[in-house]
Image 1 (cartoon, rainbow, N blue to C red):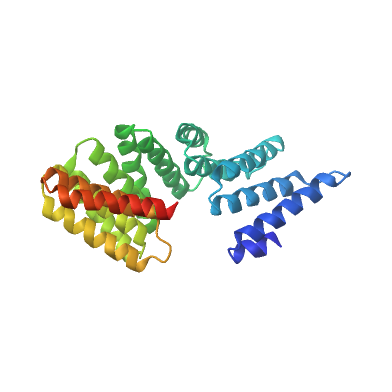
Image 2: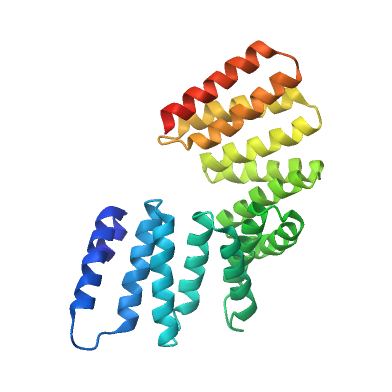
Length: 274
């Protein structure tokens, strides 16, 4: 029943069925299949992740990994990869980076190349979040051609977004703008409105660094309006980020009135989105 709920993307119901399954497993007096129990824990972790309860997802994924390790299951590597993603989504970037370093170092020789691409991206993205931009760039530039060669459009796009941010932070402004432009084009084709908005904001920050205020404002205002129009449940943090750059530009230009108006709008969005 949990599998059926997951196929319907009813994550609350999937979580409830998984919890019931675990209660049944643990109440049995006879020996149960640890592979099956680990799979239930992992399914529970995935449902929690989809419900943005990533810290809880980490705990359940760790329990799954422990069970798989105990019986030397072939599913352990997959569980570790999921755990690494949940750690990253929970903001535990140090732990996520360590997890993916271990996965890359110990992956079997017959492991599919696309999984290496995902591991390199996840490690690079975690390091970007930790401010270790140069190593992040090295890893992401290894991940991107793997993604491209496997026609993994989503992974290629994620690499470009993370690369653009890292280039920006290392003051490689031309590279940041060109990579963000690629990401905008890819995200537009994929109809991923959130990543279009995120990529436009990164590119706008690049234009801001070049003091190209008109281009920056064009990206920010146009991107923000399109995002709100096309996204039924917008991530307001993306809008606030764009508005913050707009306010910064107005302040640099000495337009205190419009800067104040933008800051007030940010405060209102923040209050209403909590």
